[in-house]
Length: 269
Length: 170
Image 1 (cartoon, each protein chain N blue to C red):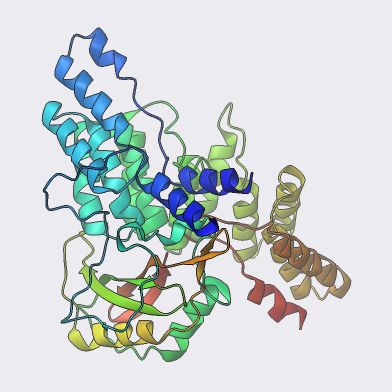
Image 2 (cartoon, rainbow over the protein chains, first blue to last red):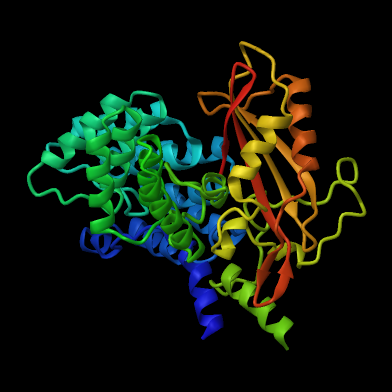
């Protein structure tokens, strides 16, 4: 059981995308692309291995416009810090299918490269190409307009970040994601709108009570208001959650507004 | 037996296509592999895992593993990095290396990138200072799978603006 769990954990990190439907090429009687598609989807297992990279090259040779193969080939470079090679490959995927790849490239520029302005440009270009929903981050945590708001926050434009999140909340049929209220609460705190910050952080807890961070930021607000008991209560809860493993976590990078145990312990001293 | 099980597990993860024949190509065994270079590397740096199957830091499902977590790395560089204003020193500086089964580091490789995702050579003194500080970090946590201590690949990327570190990834 333990082995199964560890294997699953490791393999999960290798699979980020759904596979394309190769039968589309078969249906369209495009035999080279059908073969290329089959090859590329076989290449997904040992991500970054020589065999895998060669298979993507073979798939591209058979089907030069097959953006999926370029995108998949790019992933190990991104995850291993070779952003120069990653960008060349992902740019080719975007060139071949902007609608299908701009959102993904933008998200990676935000998550891995911290290229906030580049990410914003990708999200905005994608938005200008469609009247519809622009999609979600590849880890499913954020609708891409929320990710765009986080990029604006990272470059210091916090009011613009708030506007974007609030606009997204007002969209018909939008259900806020797991961390939307949390980030909005932190932003409100940072711009000094304390009561709204408390409301959104509490709303975050009521909708997703599985991470320590909202308690930490609530505690920090109460500390500023000299509400010692509320500060202690929330900070201790943040610590208990953190120690239980209830915290913002990503296997590759550090999520925005994440806190660390040292942050909590410093406040409880 | 336990050891055999762990190596099998790693082999399955890295070779799940069942490919055993390697075509001659310019690709390394795995993207990002760092092979020993006598001119650059400490010959005494110990590698415990099979060289062709060294996992990446994210393969353990624990994220970046450092004593005191990522914030300890940020604080270490805040305290020790002595930056000076250098207008043209903007971009990303990535240092990739191996954390071995004893938590020691080696086989450092460095690559600079400008804001347009093109290779960039940073000021040598700046590069050397960041590399030296990275080599002196002593809080790396040993990677473990099923109780077996393993080596792993790690990287640190420094986002530089005008010669100052403004962010460290991952």
